[in-house]
Length: 559
Image 1 (cartoon, rainbow, N blue to C red):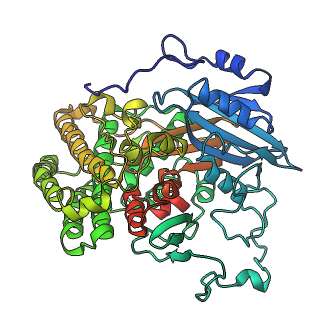
Image 2: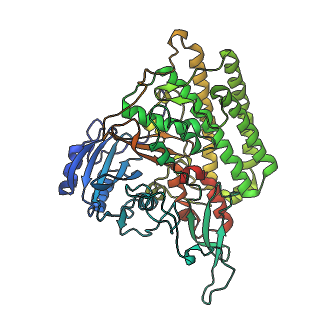
Image 3: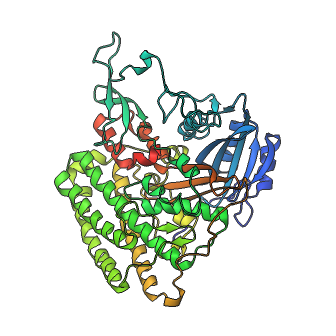
């Protein structure tokens, strides 16, 4: 393996000499704030008082180095509500800890974590919206996915889904009121969206302008909320959940999405995937990454200078080529449903040699296609004017918001789960993590184009491995029980490096063949929250470019 390692840092509090998490040292650091300890599959959990959340999180961030709040999970039990902050480190993804915050059912109020991690702003709003936990001191305690007029919290145990959503007439007022001038205002309020074109999904961006300069931006999400978590909680681990992940990021990120669920469920049930199936997964996942990045680059060109006939069409042409290969492999062009717990559903298409040649022919033509994108985009003067030094996202700000994927790596953050928390067959292959220090819209395009090259290197090596693999050792699935019933209250959070960043899944088993709680950590959700930081003070045209550079899919943001 020739993967470069992230820059080494001095050992923080709670780290042993061999780089493992010292949970006893962390318990000593937190002192009396710890009420109890829990053992999750991926990490230890510290149970803390709801009024000491910030004190605990500040200590873990500033003294123990847990600078990445990757996910916030809220759920309700018969006797309590609970919030779990899943923490890890950008410098070492293998070091994890969970902070569990129980609150009583009569008064589910917990201290907000927003002053510690800005990403908690949106995550806690979602927890309030769907579960009903309130966060004291939160700067914006409103619903985020459902309308403000919604009655009740859909994931609470006493929620009545048949209750009619009847509100007063005033609550039905059209938010797109007639144009009018306030008596003492020099600004203009502008609705961008919630139409689909140029917002990368059904997104409503509430924008306040001072002339052409952006004074305030508020992304308004939830228009595409499809209850994916709830549907997964109604499905069985073994057979019924796997088709859903394809529908989160439909760029397509299908196999990457499926892998996120597979990794979590396989950790939960202690399933070991055969090496041959891991190679198939790795190859297919990188094909999906290339397809996703091509769509991102093509639509971004459409955003910044309206180029539909050249760059966008070129990107669609090359995306069709990789989707043809994915269709040959999986039988579908977007909703693949190719992965199974313990492996994949079937082997390569036959004749195998024909498929090998198709992939190699495609890879041989990819460098020429990438050169075209550099000629048309990165070397284009108009494109550079629109993108260089616009949409600046400082590394510390990106970390506070939990940004991952190309968005983080374009700000110089050397973080990639394929290397930092190895899974699949990545640690056996020769490839590099791409980073740029520009922190702007231009750098994010450069990262995606370079990642296409690295994904091509991975696919080429996978094809070589598959071609030389002994025929009698081509095991595509582990021996998995027909019905999976993990032990009750077993909890796990696992993630993969999806095309947009860290796609994580939290699962809590209730002892049945269906999850008791299923939480999706969407990279687009956290990345989109950075838009105000990138846009305020810049021109409205730059805000459109910044939104495009984030490469969000609203089906994954809203879930």
